[in-house]
Length: 424
Ligand SMILES: *Cc1c(COP(=O)(O)O)cnc(C)c1O
Image 1 (cartoon, rainbow, N blue to C red):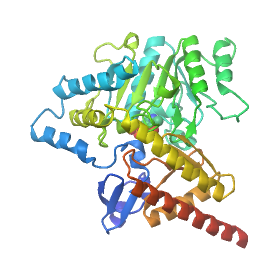
Image 2 (cartoon, rainbow, N blue to C red):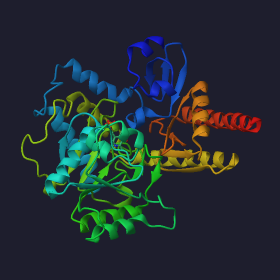
Image 3 (cartoon, rainbow, N blue to C red):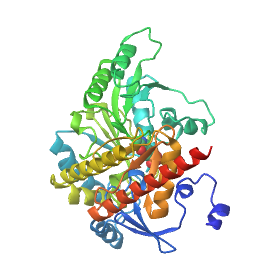
Image 4 (tube, protein in one colour):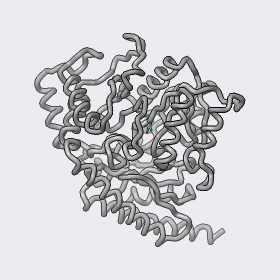
């Protein structure tokens, strides 16, 4: 690891929590250079919903590469792009009664968020974006401006502007409906909040602590956006592609966003691929007004098409995610009540958070878990929440092994921290 310390920038983050040299991976298991086997409950922060090196998807990519088909074509028309759009259109959109145009942006989620903000501002002629407490949308300046986290905001080094933060669902406790507050503020010409170009929301806040918005709240937010003349934009970068038990995380609420932002697991293989789904009447771009060298990487489009064909042509996969999600939740609920304190479990589908309330408990548990062979990441405003994001394709053996390791780690962490505080 010494060479990494001297060669690579201090900015590296995950290696600090998960030291080791990871050389191979398949499904939900990663192998290190020194022969350790590690179960992955982080899944590339949600970029590996179908697991590492998914063998069913891999064939499509290797075949494509072997055929000398176009890999890089800027945004030129290719058969790979056409097949992706037609497949996504018929299998995902039409099945759900949705109609969108595709905009392929630069490869990262932040690239796609920037495009969504730009388009919303262009359409409305307004600057302000409503985003929410604990929201996370990426690291570029525009995306950071709509991201709540102070650490990330401070790193930008310039004043971030053009956004107003409003309380997310539940932020002010169960008694306050924060959608009412937002509605009042936006419809009051003297509230001091500028009319928004867009309301940008995650249906479950991934980095922000697996905070779950209720169906009714989301429906209100959509209605408020409409009444305020703003675009309703759902950031489905982390919660999309099946994570919550349906392809889009907003299906359960019957929402119809003006723009949907997709990235992370879209390619199905961990390859960078991002896009906006834009309602046709909102497609106000002029040709070339927003470009980028790496838009719609053809290799990633090929794997994305394969993932849709393999997993989304029937209901079985989504039902499995819901079932396994319930199983995980029952186990985590049992652990939460077994170990007392004020632990809470929340989430939807296979995106679950175990709120330890205290950062040091979450940190000690994650550290012990990694020693035992489990990668589990923390999230939330003070990193107090352990985030369970296993591949949607994980088998029961690996899932149960991982959950066992988590429980043992939590028990040991509590014992150790209890012992330590008793010494004071
Ligand atoms: C990861 C993430 C982003 C940013 O994606 P990058 O590829 O890291 O730029 C945006 N929104 C959400 C909800 C995310 O989880």
